[in-house]
Image 1 (cartoon, rainbow, N blue to C red):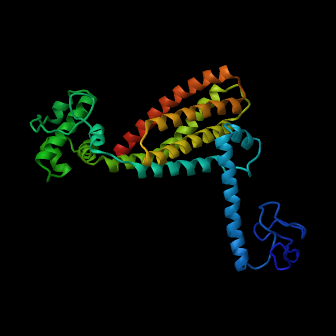
Image 2: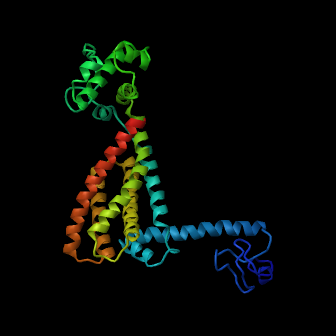
Image 3: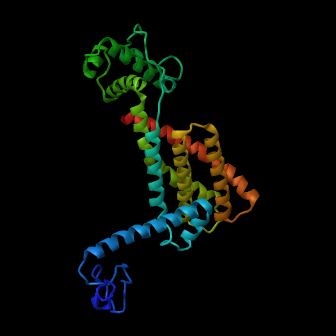
Length: 332
């Protein structure tokens, strides 16, 4: 024990880390928590600290996961009441689980030829896009296009640029616009490049889908505070602050990503809609129970707010996904 870093003979009167005044009876610094010891680092000390930190984190992780999974709403209650050292930080834990999910999802992404045809845009008079095989589309000038509505003009330009590129693949964007008598503007250049991108995406959609999925974590990061605001307004009479609602939102979304990750792993080996349905129902039941526990309201009140929140969640999630894919298309 005399050679141990915990030995009293190695105690300082000033913390080696933050310089807080200490007593020789203080085993740890009361301010930063570092061990009060001046003993030089040995091989044993190094490995003790290394494995000690792993075991400590592993213990916190297991406690966080077990409470999150088996005690809906309880982890949020205990965290806001002050049990911060017992559980992992809600935001950090959410970030870790969501990253794991997106890695698993991208890894498991398998697009068949049928999937590619389903994803393919159709460039026609309807609302979708498809590859243009008809190269006899009239190449309208900028002046003729100006008479059309914004959406119609955009669609016509996409058609024209695709057809022109099919006929003249060696021409640069600037030369193409000049030949077509279209203004050499940043907007027209952007449409021209996006038109070529449509063809590329239809031929090989995998890389675009992976790129778009990679942007979802950032989009969802901004989505959660908005959903928290809705929670705050829905439960306006509760004593919780916005940040306490945010803790609940992070925990509920973490559970969603955890179950989705579990579903992806199962789907790699067994493709079954039944399992996906069971997991979806399990999460909805989990969320309902979490709302009851955290907000301490009765069955009927919770049910009404549960339905309301889920409708809003689906709408917001759909808008968020659409924004993510449109932004990805614009930046790809």
